[in-house]
Length: 379
Image (cartoon, rainbow, N blue to C red; front, side, top):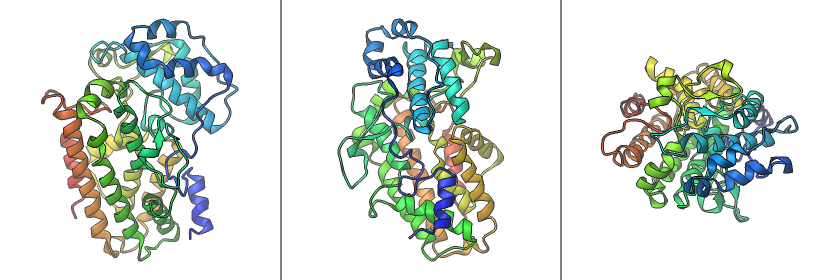
């Protein structure tokens, strides 16, 4: 049973006790005046294949977003607009990126981002946390019963499975049996609020991380690495490479006064879960790694970012936390997850690139960094 005080903390930081950092019950349809956004994103894979996307985007009117008022409306608008932006920039492939985003996308996108505190690019908060819907009524929440709302750039089922499995890594499931991740965050919030470790606190973390490790190991069952690498990966890319890097980033038409924006793409480093666990367990990283992680925290919803800081500050006040029952097991589980993540990155990016790429979807030179992050879990 969760204390009311703990529930208040979770609610304040926009964390659902059952779904965690996932947006509970995301909206799937905006008001009718935004139907064109839906129509183009629903057809985006076919439009790219037929070389018709640019024509459709040129015909798209510049819509005002002042009638979008709820958080769910704004999150869906962000998801749709960053999908349109990704399609526009990468429609001709990773080596022929467009260097600007038209005003009919960039102007409403910037307005939505200002109100949400999110970046104007595809990020974990949009394509994972707010990009899911149930496809059938169920008491068990897993990737087999959910589908994505949009960001469908290939007809292969891998497109759906990549994001729904990613969602499963982030989710805190509906049933008691599948609720380890929710219990872990609730246990961390409770320990930080009350300033003490319960007997089961570390076990909740260990159970959650072990389950997540098992989940990401399923990726290859449903997402062939070559499909991800050649058909989906570059749509998740940031604006920090090749011609975009030479320009200094992407230029948003209608916002030219801001200059080029060197934004990072969607990345696992933008997932709040392991930032929270690192903060609670007191896992320390070198300055360059911490700078990298801090940079990616800027792509999280503001309240989730604040929760990480709140956990770090309050966990530091708990006496003998590192001597708590199960601490070493929890730390070992985190290291195991990171080692498995390295193997997944190797299969999905390094090997398909035949050794020519060391760049992840978030645009980072990361293999050495990932090994160092895993090694930081050693006592």
